Length: 166
Length: 166
DNA sequence: TCACATTCGTTGCAAGAGCAACTAGATCGC
DNA sequence: GCGATCTAGTTGCTCTTGCAACGAATGTGA
Image 1 (cartoon, each protein chain N blue to C red):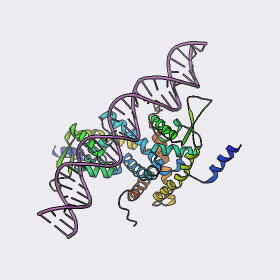
Image 2: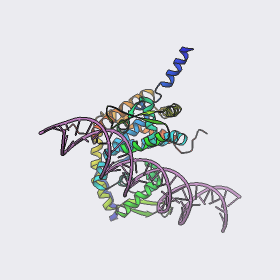
Image 3: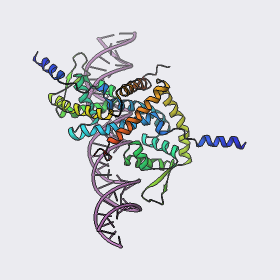
């Protein structure tokens, strides 16, 4: 029929996007799957949101860090981090320390209660990660991490930051 | 003993999760970077949201598909897809076709206008992807895709679906 | 020193997303 | 054939998030 051949012509016209082979789609689907699974740990058991969880982990690892650092590092909007910090502060999990050298910014720090959550949460998160990674051989894991980093660095350079290709 | 308590203290102070080596974090950061960059194409130029863009691309590739298929495949909530379809329909970009065999579901299809957007958008998306992937050698790209798929399949099996380990 | 631009962080507002309840239709078991 | 159960999709409600405007502090250049 006329309709069918019209469709066929359109279809054959050009090789367009194959979703299952399209990098941003695949990476985002994988990210959603891991985020959903991980949230079972920090959300249902400790009442943390994703930004909250990230702040806790960052401060657990780095001791002191500004909201801006956390936002940039995790590709989150500064307002997202600001609100998450406010919640954690109200719950008594993080403290703000004024920075005398630059009074615009505040150094964030875990309280003992915040660190207790981090210590309780971290092993479970690592166990989850291990479970996830168990499908990959050790060398595959290494390879994967290397490629993710390479892509990540490159993607950052393509972002809103000053393009150095001028 | 002093030695033992020192060890214990050290253990407590150790960073348990290293954010830069934590898979879900890295994957999500990479996903955010690519999604932000890609949205420059479909959002600012065609007024599409992420779900809308995904629906367009899915139907551009598959011709007919249900909302449920699109949601499952892309790990989106069914209400998200439902609302995005409603917007696209109102804009005249997609059509619903009743399925006589099962009248609960509706097959979605691009209108000519919808396909026009797909045809205009796809090459730009592919160009972006190529630019992103240009940091990886061809074999690295292949390896990366294989590993992403492997992890994705495994992550899906760890998800909310019936755990078969019971 | 003084205007101008920039940066960190907060907040009002509106759009987006998840949850749960709901309708409509299909399926299973008896 | 009939009720209980399940599935596809919609919608009200609420919380989250992004954007843009803002205040406060800093930096820059004349």
